[in-house]
Length: 432
Image (cartoon, rainbow, N blue to C red; front, side):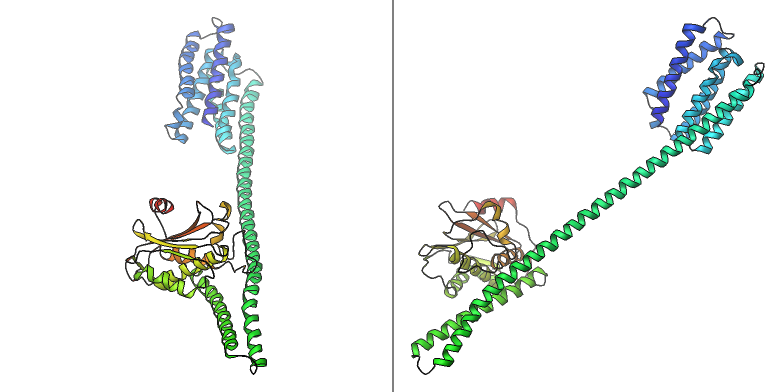
């Protein structure tokens, strides 16, 4: 605002000087006074416009000082250019407008009245104003000040309302964004629920149907079945029951890890023993298993949880690797941690699914019809890795298939570490 007032002051001074030089010099009663005011007003206007003194001085005090200075210079300029006969009295109207630009209505009226009084006093000392001019000119000055104050007040009110509306619009936009996020989250939860019900219903129904079917067979044909047939049926029942147990444990464990109640118990663990226990337990069918784990490789990890990681990765590899093709399990030391790698020979994972497959109830695009899965296994791998302070990811194999990798940083036995891996560690792990 002060810059606008400075521009207005410079414009008034410029017009006054030009008019005086063109039409009035030599024809005024006090030319020396007029030239003195020009010599003061021009540098003053340039200083206030170019050097922006209002940025370096307290604005309230600076504004009051300039009002006084402007009023005195205008009064002296009127005296120097004709006194009561001078047309430059209208500059007081401009001054009143500049006050209205700065202050409220009451202050504008007060300054307008003071400038009118100053003008009347100066003109009275100079011989008085003729006729109605003594009323009209001071009245116009006060009216101009009041009008400027009213316009300024309306402008400030409009600006405040605009700021208020902008703030309300911003708040509403933020609320709308949060509502959209909530709707999207609810939609995702609903989709997850649908996917979960679909996957679980299939996963539970299949082993449950097997258990019931084989149990009924034993009940109805016990007297005609051979010992070998009974043993085979019991084996199938046990396998189906173990499958049901794994599904239940996956759900319980995932809930525990998601809610942050899982505990980590580190201890010196031979990784080769963990891998061997997994391979002894998991049915790999006709897939050759290639193991490259140093016998002396030891890690301070939670052994049962690492066993769960390897088990889920091997089961996933068995599911997606075509019959007869090998599965590779590797482990090594890497940047202060242990890197575990399980390679399959499947169709690989598209780049836009590499992160999603580690989310709960999410699977890759290459689903296996006879064993669709629940979408929990890899999510558990990711959660267990994070629990150790590491992470899990998947890369493409050079000769086809996917390479699932888990980095487990070292930790003191019995300690629990937070998530986080350095960029250098991940870069080195990716080079294997």
